[in-house]
Amino acid sequence: MAIVNAQTEELISQIERAFRGVERPQITLRVGRALDDNMQDELPKLRKLDDHYGGWSEIPKEDIEKFQDVFRWLCPIGFRFYLPAFMIHSLRFSKEPATDVWLSGAFSESEPGVLESTLEFLNPAQKEVVWRFLVIALESVHDDYNRDWWNHSWDKEWAEDFDKERVWANLGRAFTLLKSKVEQDRGKTSA
Image (cartoon, rainbow, N blue to C red; front, side, top):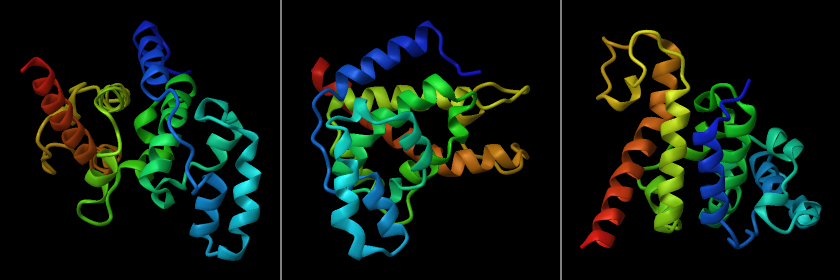
């Protein structure tokens, strides 16, 4: 059962507004998979296969579920284009969004500075809804002891649960980075 409730429905509406009209990337889902599979000769043909949708809101559920592993192959424009579809899919269909496969690829950072430079392609409203999505996703991780374990400094002694460690490694830095950027953006608008 998904976590859809009044809070998530409101966030879905905010995601739809914040990402309305974002440009379509050259590196599509199928192109990302081909890059991962080292099939560069197939790229033009595969790019055309993704022409069946013009905007991110038209991406079929089947494509979202099939291509959850391609985020690390997307350019920042592709990240911005596909992110809202994947977030909404997680909010509607995932019981525990923080453990969805696509999040590991979208928010983990293999090289220093890559995630930060990718997030620079998001405007303040987009950063805000992505951060709010991460809050909901992280709150969905089952924890009987402390519901907001992810909002504390990481302590390997304290958290013995392997799933928590994996989720924190993949999402903790993104959460902290986005929170900082959202607070900066809020400070700019209130000044």
